[in-house]
Length: 165
Length: 168
Picture 1 (cartoon, chains in turn red, orange):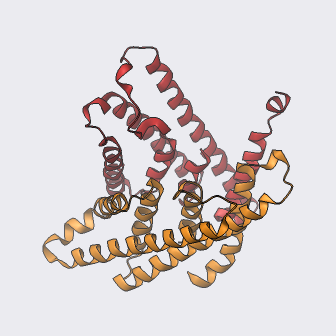
Picture 2 (spheres, chains in turn blue, red):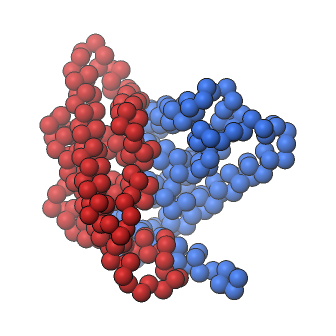
Picture 3 (spheres, each protein chain N blue to C red):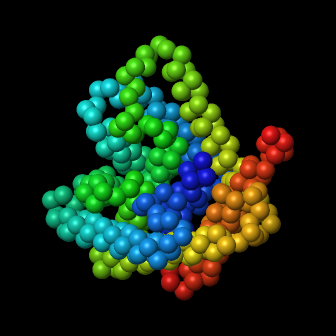
């Protein structure tokens, strides 16, 4: 999720526009995962990865044409997509469409999308407060956001219940 | 451009080419140098090709309308041909888009590609050096992993920020 946020850092958006952009990224992620889950058997072997990147490039072009959103968001989608998604070794053929695996798989992706949206909105809020209210110029730059991400990562890693475990 | 260097420098440092073991920093430096050279040549080639295609009057509107699709496909094919990682392809595509968006001439674009590649290489060299130094530091376990990596990236970004004003 941290890596998925990095391309998003390039956008100089305020809180509202960042919200719209991240909403698009999350919806697109869900649509992409659903599309490739149900159609991947139709692709010849080893062509899934090129098809995925072609899909990303075509959508980047379409979104740029319609909304002028620069295409860095496809990198966020790439990092949010499941790791096993593009591997040639992954064989989904044994999973039936109506098996219990499918809801669990999609539930994990839905959680990842919601988590990413929450993370981005939190950082956009911190950026807004730091930059506009407090006038700290570092928050306009990657410097401030990377230090905030370091703090978030530190807090996440040292959660009290995890320490007790 | 500064944002691009920091973002994709960090991404390439984490998920770029198969990194050399931290215990052998010289090998890591060689790989960073080669990767930066490949990035520069790939971006420059795409910029030059796109500038050439844009001179053909009949297809100028198409070139203008598909400013992401064309370079994106070229970036993907060239990355696959060189057997590069997916992050390399994304870095090339982002660099080409950002340089094209500035609407410089071909020569200035290639110069800018050189600056971006050098900046990304500088970021990665600093990152590798600091990670190597951390091997010999007594870091508390609570700081190991992502917290320390983001902190290092933040410090490097801080230093490059001061240079950024001189270059861009």
